[in-house]
Amino acid sequence: MQIITEPGLMQATIEKLRLNRQRIGVVMTMGALHEGHLSLIEQARSMSGTVILTIFVNPKQFGPDEDFHRYPRPFEQDAAHARAAGVDYLFVPSVESMYPEGFQTSVHAGAVAEGFEGARRPGHFNGVATIVAKLLQITKPHAAVFGEKDAQQLAVIRSMVRDLNIDVEIVSAPVVREKSGLAVSSRNIYLSGEQRESASALFRGIRYAGDELEKQRTDLAAIAEEIKGMIAEEPELLTDYVAFVEETSFMPTETAEPGKRYRLLLAVYAGNVRLIDNSLFTI
Ligand code: PAF
Image 1: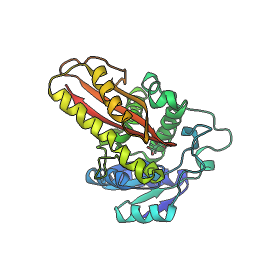
Image 2: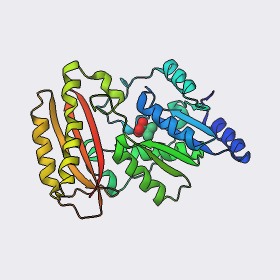
Image 3: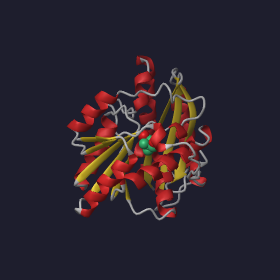
Image 4: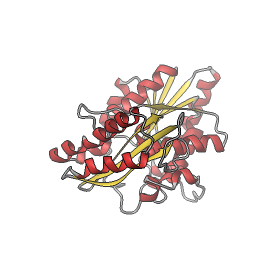
């Protein structure tokens, strides 16, 4: 595995690979690699001859009160995981090389970025869209794999790629879960034992939604309220939102129409830790 820190060198390396007709897959991360990231790498490996993993803790997607400085950066461990997972190139640029003095252009994600995580974290998705656009320019992949865990991020990236005619296939990989059903996330390390136990209520909510929709219910708003009630019984959790949205636009939806796909979104606080989860349902 080759480690590259300079954007220019990464671009030149990719240029050569592309001339040699290598199919390139990229997985973008902020490091602190866990099982979820490894499943993205596996997915990229299954569809590409060369796999690039990027690790960059992107300051532009953190709000002023968020955990940019506290965000874990276990580089040696990440590099070992990447090597073992069969990554060919590890791209780890510095903040200065990605945002040099005079940097002033950004991508404005549209309406899809406004609600839910976008409303709670102003500017977050513009920061994500900007860095993803830059990393796509630098790594020029045929395919880029993103996790469904961050479903709104995935929707923002899909709409950016479509709107800006970026020539890449965006591939989504399913949420990886712990035994309890808790979605694997870098932030899970901050959870106490009790919080972790309570957090499995999110997955119970998702299963409940699946069961109710199988009964042909279409009253999505009512199902969401019932899930909120289930979460409220957990002493360690405080609900931020539970809602169904239309799959691509992320517009909140109260009543389902047959044949359409809706995503159930859940966000809670366990103490200071924000947990999100989601699942896609076809009605
Ligand atoms: O999902 C993440 O880890 C980040 O938001 C991403 C896509 C790597 C952009 O910084």
